[in-house]
Length: 322
Ligand code: GLU
Image 1 (tube, protein in one colour):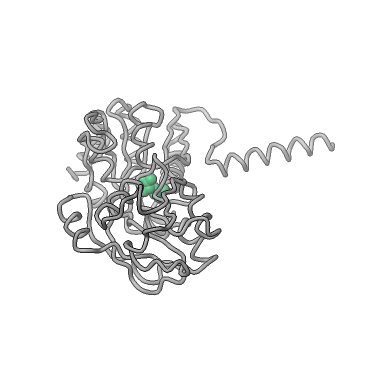
Image 2 (cartoon, protein in one colour):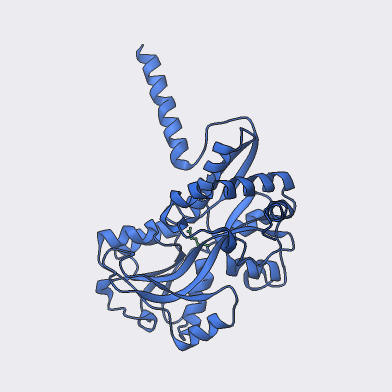
């Protein structure tokens, strides 16, 4: 009896751990793996909830697993190597990958394919109220997390620092932590500020906002506005006051779009089935996270740099959207 109970407890713990780690119990069906971001970000929620829809409404055809991952650059590279079936990635990083720029300089990813856009993401610069940092220029001499190398925000942080005339080697102490660690490091006073490009609200900002006094700084100089105006995948935006505890006023910054991408080699039927499931149960997806409330089919077909995957295109044509 005791042995049996111990066994059941172990099984329950394993099931719970599976749920926490985003691993579904083994099931028959074709495996689909979607890569997200840090567990406190919104990409992980995209990966989890798209998989939930596919597992729930897919008639047992698929076993979809949404897992935490290192962010946009990592996801695009993993999709390229077919280690992930789908990745969540920023629209600016897609543009660079498909056109062979920045991290993909001279090595365009010709097989990158768009599936759909998701929520808008803002380029955030977050500090504690007690650091004396009131604007990007005040970062000089401070310890600043610019994001782990696989993240999408790292490129945004580098752009912002450069545009504000801050030399990342000489003027600041750079950290490259993953976001879940960066939020804690800000609370623990190990860093003075972090950059993060994320949908709102994000647990990565809620965590420091509820345990210490934070500030979110504007990124809206004339040079930033010119930089944004020259690029189709950026737009100026304002994070409404009250989005985060203690941040009463709106904050002006710029935004990108989170997108779901795949590889040209992914099966047309599989991509079609995933896309159809998402759009036929969009209300369920919109209700799954506050950042998803704004989702709307017309906008979800925009903001994409790579061509549509043929499986996605087939569904959009059937709906008369293309
Ligand atoms: N935009 C971030 C990145 O590309 C991830 C944000 C999130 O996880 O929600 O790395």
